[in-house]
Image (cartoon, rainbow, N blue to C red; front, side, top):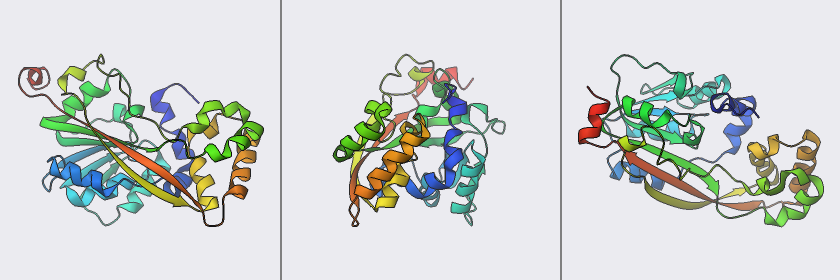
Length: 266
């Protein structure tokens, strides 16, 4: 996989349909907390970065006045448009965050990112976010991840059939980054306010391996290894399925008021 963070955003577009039907949605409790915090409200104009197939887009849209959803992958953008069809409050834009040119003077009340903020270009993402937010606006970034190591029961299969995966097999989603304090523009925002939400999904045998196949760890090994281990896992999962525990991490940072704001708004 390429090291270019913008180019890597297109990797998921190569298996957009699989990603759409396999990745879980975001917990309702998280959206309720964002409403209680005043970040999502009926008058809010929201920018979403990395919309993917529109799971978070569709959940946020009924709670706000408008959503501009940026998605660089054409297939994923099509799925997002299909998911929000009929909603006059959502505009899906085919663009990476870094390459998007907003209408002159356009400012948003919030920027939301569902399992995508870590893909944004370090060094520019905070300052660019600040220039797109209204005074008092906020970034609300969330990540869906496995809670613990739910695949430990398949360790023998990984060892025998996909040994080059190593510890990557334990990765069930990208964790929120903790070291962003020295990034340019980070001082324009208040410290992160963190919350977490725990929940579960029961996967049928086929559903489990389809979900696993959407994770990048399975795309950095040889195809024959990937197919062999996924086939073996599917055969081992009971007919009744398997429960995967998840944790959703939410990080919220508001734009600082006062002096620092003058760096953005002349």
